View 1: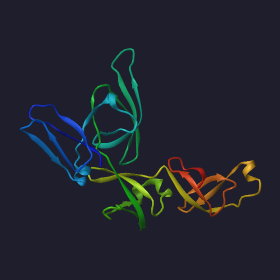
View 2: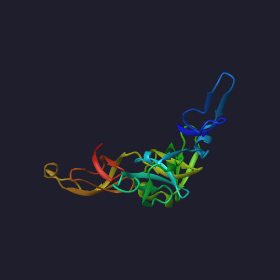
View 3: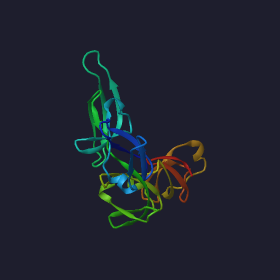
View 4: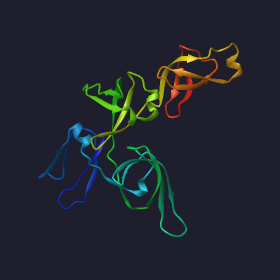
Length: 235
């Protein structure tokens, strides 16, 4: 898993470099070498992160604000005629899902949140918990239904998702942008519906209701955009 590690050597300034393996070795001279060995789990939960300049903030950046992890949704660099430049952002809290606007002075240091993403397969639901499995280690992760929001309406067994970790905790999960779901209930289509257009509600196998064209029938599979909940096409 890719990540970043920060350290310093003697009087040299702090370094922040990427790593993608579980073993990292750096040589600074023929006489000395520094070796850093980190297991995959240590990489995920170490909490090691770097600071970045507010000037480097962009959409998708993960930052720590008031001790919580946030994802930058929107940003705008502003340089007024008078006064100091600043960065206006809209950020979303990974833990509670709240969205706020936050302004940072240009050039200040902002701590980057050490958020890691791992692919898991949703295997089954156990009461009010959703069970995900790591297909390489068979380790199970359980998430409470109350913490998962309405994204579960697109979740079906066998689907691969991304779990997001921060400080040894799952803080969010991401679905594929597009999922294939079978229609289990809908009014029957009529001849000529394709040409006439129009739409109707249809219930898919996960229980979610999707607005579909009139020609879509029970038993057919459709593609749904999980970000918007909108019908895309027949599969």
